[in-house]
Image (cartoon, rainbow, N blue to C red; front, side, top):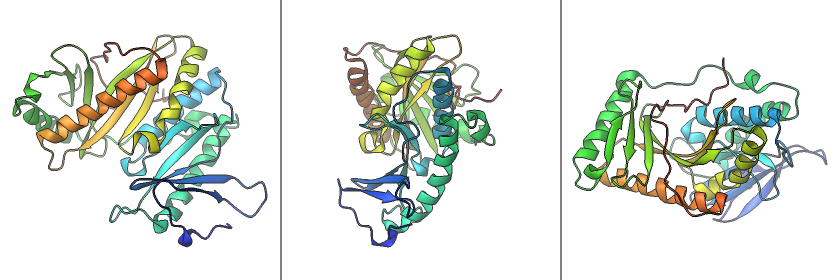
Length: 307
């Protein structure tokens, strides 16, 4: 490794390339500072991805990877300005939430292993199912219900939030809510985060064609916006592409419920909906329309490839 990690210092907006090894053809990783966060981007998994059944399965697997990753990692899949499919991690020190060179080495070490496995998947040497390990962490039902009850208390205790229509998600054992504006202009699904101390908010950006090639093309057009330097650490894009039905392009956020107040709910919903509105304009090039999520929300949104 030719880079002295301890010597790295980045001002906001600055970036550099990290060479992984001494060989001239060694993979180059990109490190960027965006406000209070550093973002480490992998070398390309694919330089110019083209729609195919293999790409569809790989993208679904990458969204599972993103959904199951610890919230602290900020792990996400995105497409670079050059059109390459990449993985990205947030760099920070867990003990005090600071960002500096001391946090880089452990993140980079983990990132290398993950990238190498998924490079094998994208290049056809392994199946996506083979590198998705274990079962996703699930918050205990009692804990999920407690978080949802806390959320409902904040909604009913505030004069503005009280206007939102609130329904329990079907078949979710009171561990999920569906929020709808009084004017039916938006719908947000709320579930307990697998970590057990936060809620996940999800809203719809748009539907995807049942044709797999068209769905892949739409997801690839959206993924340049999924960079952490654009969406920040608590928002990310997700996609569902079923075998024989229309898919969904979703925006998800995470809100810690530790000490949360009504204003935190308003801020989280406001950010999610305003970003979703901007993404809808940017991705589709059309004016925003009323969109709806399915009522039977699952905490992982049906992303898993497991049988």
